[in-house]
Image (cartoon, rainbow, N blue to C red):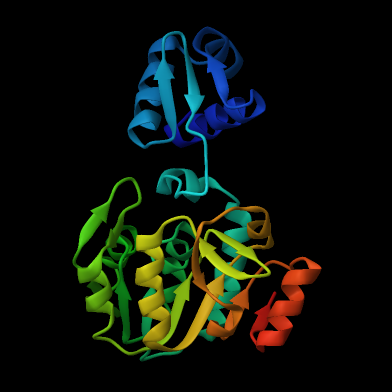
Length: 252
């Protein structure tokens, strides 16, 4: 069994155990040796997903602050793929596009391949590293401060760099949505995304409807600031009223 398969099993085991697990019991349940499990747990700890302690492990609790990029990449993958497949219909050749560093937008990259002469501006190292293999795309990556555990470049240098461009479309995701607007779990991420919205002709938010049950403390934008929200379905009644009032198009 490969590491990624074991990783999913380990996280599933921990989720079923309220975020905690016993090493000995885990070896029996997952049919792996203690040495193999130990190596896997060291890697998961380095990725910021778990914390090891004597005889056991625990998931690092999610909060309104940003989760590790490695955790977010594994959350709701099917829903995220559904969103990016819909969002790609908005692309055309010769576009300049902003891409944020979110795990959702990172899944968008393979769908850029059929388009010619694209220019991408991003604050995501995860985004830029994937685009390195695409000869049809020119990629600009923001300067600035590397945010711990997120593969994101943030800070005033990043925001100022983004302001030098004028994009056809900005694609981004966010932490949470309420009837009061779109929220982030980190102010520095939100400020970079605000610059992307400000400096693009069209802004597109990729947001599955489970985000209305999440928390974010820093307001990114109002619904009126986005031209299109790409989702997997409708949101709750109060949020839908605000979307309708803002003239923002909901695509699902």
